[in-house]
Amino acid sequence: MANLIEVKVPDIGDFKDVPVIEVLVKPGDTVRAEDALITLESDKATLDVPSPAAGIVGDIKLKVGDKVSEGALILMLDAQEGAGVQTVAPGAAPPPPAATPVAAPVAAPAAGAYAGSVDVECEMLVLGAGPGGYSAAFRSADLGMKTVLVERYATLGGVCLNVGCIPSKALLHTAAVMDEAKAMAHHGIVYAEPQVDIDKLRGF
Image (cartoon, rainbow, N blue to C red; front, side, top):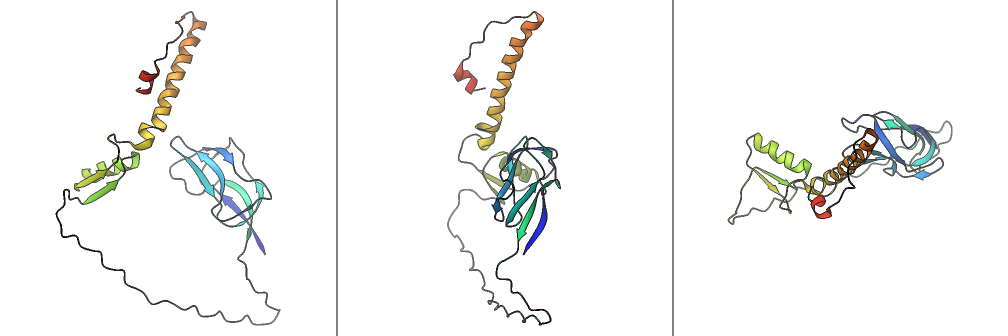
């Protein structure tokens, strides 16, 4: 048997009116639980919205370019119930469920104690100095905890700050400035053709 359900945008934090950049399914597609249905893009990251259940995709209620928030309807899903459901004849009492054996609880092994000397001791250890890591470490230190931040690179910020998001935005800003300077010719101000020093631009 099937169950038609509404699939909506889940809790995505404080983001609102997030654009849909990709619809990954079409009507008639069969999906499994946790398969990605759509991709959203905020100003900080992209986010795949997964299917809450297995089933067949019905009507899709949005398209690429739409802006959505938590609770927005994505699509209708013909959700498939679990296999192995028994059919009981009318009037017949269903058989009692079989008792499920419960395994006895097993105590976790005690953590090993280290008796040697250490170089650094701390109350809070933060692994990774990306935007989340270093802000968490600073917050921990502000609260008075002895904090150690572990990062494999010499510069804080991780890939987002040093390689991906921020450097990309700097290049886009540079390109926009060049376009604006060129457009000033329509207002009587003409600049010479720009000369681009790639090495200096990479360090911007």
